[in-house]
Image (cartoon, rainbow, N blue to C red; front, side):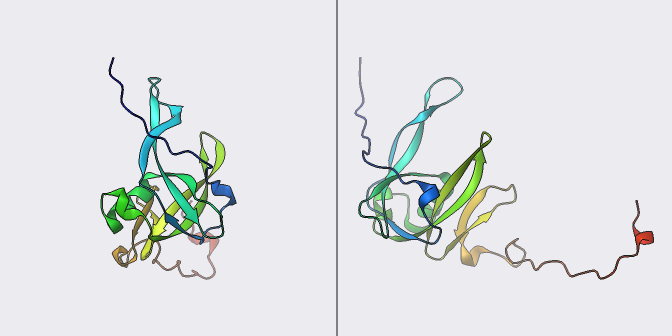
Length: 156
């Protein structure tokens, strides 16, 4: 039987709910794809992309599982090799979400000059600020106050 060497990052993990949005951090290791504690529908192990993250004000680097929005932004900003992601200042953004009905806190790592938005399907996406167009949801002004509405003008 043939085996492959599995490299796992040991140590403590980031607790996203305890991190304040706007905190700066740096990735200080190569990102490793490793088995997670979750399983696919067929029973096989899911994997996660894990890196060591040094958060300002914390005395040691912590493990963090990078979500797809973060990975896509890091690839766009610094290239495909996760070695190049190390030592770059990133801004942490957290967001309360529901996963299978349970409240969780998602953690995103935002490169300088980027911003997290929701795409047209409501998924988180991290894009260059300059990529936002005049018609993006973040830049559309709120509708003007229509003033007083006559009840007789309502069609239903």
